[in-house]
Image 1: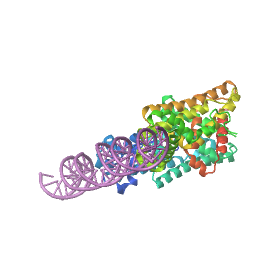
Image 2: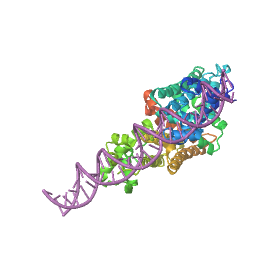
Image 3: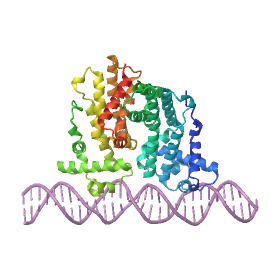
Image 4: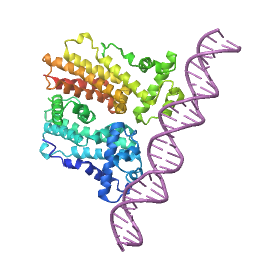
Length: 228
Length: 228
DNA sequence: TAATAATCCGAACGAGCGCTCGATTTATTA
DNA sequence: TAATAAATCGAGCGCTCGTTCGGATTATTA
């Protein structure tokens, strides 16, 4: 089990690793030069942003709160961001890149096995969102307040994910394993089943539903719906 | 066809009707006395709130924008609300009450027919959220910024809806029609399928998916998953 | 260790926020 | 139509927001 074939291992999903990639992407906009220092502070800023935003919403989070929570000063924050909205696009971009990397490289062993591929996609996606839950919640909830280009990226990213599921379904149909009227629509119905794990995470935690049971249930649910 | 057996007809879902109920609930807090005037203005305020909030988020919406959009003055708004947050609870309360009223009164003809009841619940719920889409989007997206008691109401309301689905599933199991390991978890997976219609509404509109096709697809999907 | 560079700090600024209230307009009543 | 009540208005209040910037602090170099 587990996303063994995933190119990017799960350590790459740590906040530190994610922030290292964010730093690289924004090298010229971040004035702090020392790598380890910049990554560490960026991590504290991003972590605080996710915590505060997911509790009260990005707009309601003030930079004074963010400074207090992250342990930096008001001015210190501005060594890492050019303005508040930059936090939005940093986080969204990383989420987008991560989900794309994770799903577009299924293990070679699954080639020619649409059922197993579908299972792998479901499990990998759910485990990915588990490992970076605050990031995904943020991207999901704040999407509407993104500036237009970032919002387009979010939509495209969602579409890309759906396309991956759609392709798996189609090859299952071709193999005579699956039977669905509209693969595109079927793929877009799988998405909310996967999203519910992180969107309503606290509900499932409260009810004692483990990630394994959730994955299992969604998998069974989807397979029944796709079965020929 | 449609939710023929629904006690509250679909005219009751108009903004006017909803605002009349909101007015009733907040009679003492609203200083305008003339009924038709109060309802009309409240409707314009609520409609503007939904429009602006769903575009940019409730917190980002300023009362000056709201005044402009609704056609009232700054001070005029305060004849209808005691403070900005009151808008939140007005809308949430109405959504909560409406969904509860709609689903808890299935037509008598469906008694003893769990499969038909499940279909009716899915269709009625989707048509309800279609008729009041901005309201449901608002309640869904802004839930986290509710004050604690209102947030509790939102959670309870969601739980109540799930319980209705769960009961239908259980009676289907008892009748030997359905076969699922965990009816509670199954019920909570049906919810996101229904929610996706209003949460990602613009995606489905762009793809030309009609509400009838969506209802049909979700119904088939769910029935396959529940089938014995 | 002195000189220099990199980093961090937080008071201060203008803008815009939620909200109030006395003046004004509109509707009702006598 | 004059007198009264109801409804509406928007400039102004205190405050907090995002953002800046010059000085204090720390690290690096010679």
